[in-house]
Length: 265
Image (cartoon, rainbow, N blue to C red; front, top):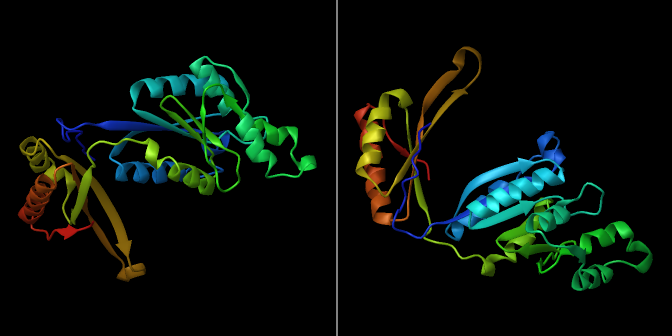
């Protein structure tokens, strides 16, 4: 695979990172689907997701990762670790990262108190109303326990349905740059044979990023099975005209190898 981060140097570039928190992700018991959802959501707003990092439920590790990411990127989105159990330590870790105190948030307590009967609003559930000082709440229309936003960090739940609802409520707070457009063209070519030509295209189109992604698959069974291989080329740019020209150049490159290009958008 070859890629180049060579897109729209003159454009305003807004970046983001996702910090996924939870032992269950690292153990393989739970699949992280939140990151791909966030990546697509951000792309629509003109924000480029540059890094996804996964850390265990260890406060020092969360603090170190969060401080590194928030210093490097425009926005940081965290998922996981804001529930009612002893290992839900994200809020405390965020407070430690910012060097601030944490306590029960009156509005968060009121929101959650209205959700439960008095005897059901346990101390464990009240833990979810502990918010770092100065943070703003993120609405949670699904289960009510809020996330929060402080500085350039947005702290959300790990449960996908809840995370998505929280994320949708943040749309007005995110300021993106030029939207990154993309096109995809595939062909039955060998990546190693077109690498030179692809590099030449990258040099020619300075406002475009080219990525090559080989594929191999088999169709049918037994003696009737047929193997197919090739490469999908993904082209990205903030300029539609450049993108169209680059797509045509990739098509010509594939035809030069004796294959027929196929649009895979």
